[in-house]
Length: 258
Image (cartoon, rainbow, N blue to C red):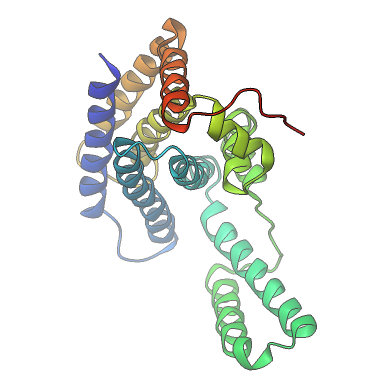
């Protein structure tokens, strides 16, 4: 299966899985929150994946990495939820506490109480509702790295998320990579992995009409992706993009670098 067909099949599988899951989410209870949490993150993966493909079709070399990084964050949350039944509510509380802490600092040091008092009250209210509803007393701290580790994806955090973060945060090394190196294969490999694995994880978190279809097909697609890695397909795509960048950007390789 070539890369274009593999891309079409992974996108179709996740789209079908989300459509199936949408009809089966339970209306109430703890299981409902886990299902909604997982569904929203999986839908975010699909929505961003659609944007990612549009950007790449337009030869936008810079922004796909930023989109892919966000896809990875949702994927890490889905994987963590599959490993830890308490993760969805703890992650939501962790995000809320982080917002409360940031807003309190901005009010204290930035003199922005008029603009932020209402936002602070809203987040504090959400914090209390989460604590009451899920009977949570601690202060969970779910960083991206810890989330990836919980989902047994620390290697993906190290190998992919870190590199994508260089571009997202506009580091000099990230900028130079975008200018001079081909990363299409790197992006597409991780893109395919995230979409296929998300479709495969979803049946573990949301009841579906045909759960085995998504888990089995997701596994087959991941195997196909690994086969392309072994054959060097993605490396060849990196090389092809690097040649294209040299033509389009006309980079002077004699330019000094710090």
